[in-house]
Length: 460
Image (cartoon, rainbow, N blue to C red; front, side, top):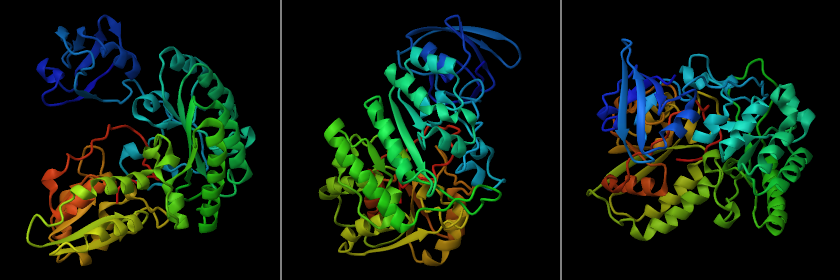
């Protein structure tokens, strides 16, 4: 049964005097088996909940609430019961490439359809049983995010290391037939599922549109901690260009047939190829920004939109700013900040951080560690009034990096104030100029057991 891990201040749970350690036995007489049962049970205005306290005492509480109002708690387990773990042995699995001494949640490999529905995790469907597919349909659990990688059954079995992996098209057909929408992805591994295999995957998924809404192609993420794993290599500049052009040809064809581009190359391919990202119209509904698709275009378009409202003067007489960014985003950030060159009294130093922790092939902002920032930025920020970094570098809802450095510790070791700002064009511009009071609160992310996003280009 669900066990409360944390009660949020000002929440309904706090009003009801619920506490960490309490078990939620039932809602309106219905036993709760997992997070999906719980979500449906809480979608009501009159509620009777049965709670078991740590000392064994049982409370029965009647409460009136808004239909969409939650209890305001975090559960000990994000799925209430147990997360469905992944039994694949994917040749590119990022969890297999991280150091053994990382925090426990980063080493969890989930393949749970409930986390896909609730939090947007990508799942392979290989670990989903037929009765669970039926439950997805019955409860209208849509949309889902599905990692396809290839539609070639034999190749998918090889790549995912699971004999059930070859059933993917049957599973997608079943879900599509019952109007379950899906966003799909291919993690592109050179020499494995690129070239003709990528053509095959696109051609076999496109007929399921609009139930299969999108297909993203992202480059494989490889760290320096690959030991005893399959031999893989990153995309070369030429291969990145080829993927961009291959996807472009399919987009041109599918826009005529489906009125949708359908397939998109992740921003990282454009960074590798040193090419400009497409215009916004190519990204349809920007359905996979969480997967690093279209983030740069959204950033640039936002910059154009807000520029007339950006102050052309500092909030203080003079300001020296160190801007921490990733290798992937450096070009975009430098180009954007060039607009501020004529602001009197402003000095900007853009500091791209190489990823020594994971390896230099990992170039995205979401995987930069506090230790690497301290090691590489210390000598460059000694005269800075403030050091800016995007919130995408930090753990969900906490001021902590992947290596458990805190923002306070980074500030202390740099010897300079550190300001965390939203990973947006607005956050960058207003943060640099010192108008941080005009910024929205830090982005908040729902905490899940999702593995690190090795493909994200969000942030700077």
